[in-house]
Image 1: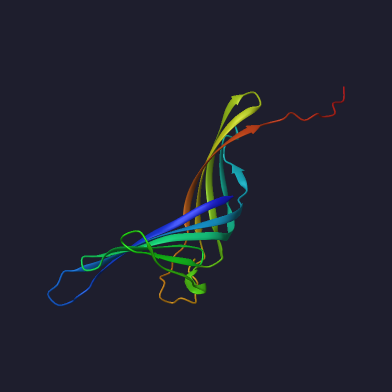
Image 2 (image 1 turned 30 degrees about the horizontal axis):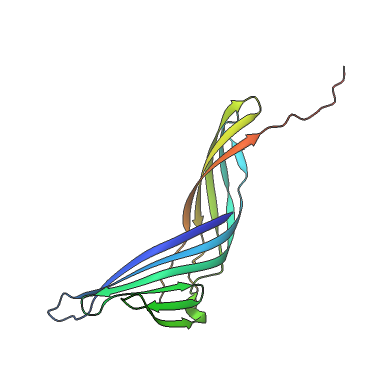
Length: 179
C-alpha cells in the first residue's frame, strides 16, 4: 500500500522577554511517503460471515519527504523555506529564492516504521456471487519516527486510520460429485 502521512507543528516564542509581547511564530508541515506492507488475518465473528475483525502488524519504508517551514514575526515579516528530501530552499517575502542548500542531516526521521493494525469490516451481498466490503483499519506505530541522532526532536509515532471499500467476486469451484 502507498501511504502519505504527515504532521503539522506550531511554535510560538517571545522575541524579547522584557516588556514586549512580540512573538515569532514557526509553523512546519511535513509530508512523508511510505510503501507499507501489512499482515492482518481476518476472523469472522458471525455465522453469516458478514462481520470480521483483523489483527496484525505493518512494516513501512519511507520513499520520500517534503515540507514547508514558515516563519513570521512583526519585525522581519514572513518567510518560508521548502524542502523535498534533502534539498532546502529559502524563499524571501517577495517570492524569490534567497538560499538553497543540500544538507544530509535534514532528514531527521527513521527510514522504517512498524506497528500494529486493528480492523473491522462488513460485507454486503450485492447479487449471488458479488459482495461489497467496507473496512476500517486503525494502525498505530510502535517506532519513534525521528532519528535518534537528533536529540532535540520529541518522540513521535505514526497513527493512521484507513477506510477501504472493495468489490469481491466469489467464483464457484468445480467439485467432484459422486452419484
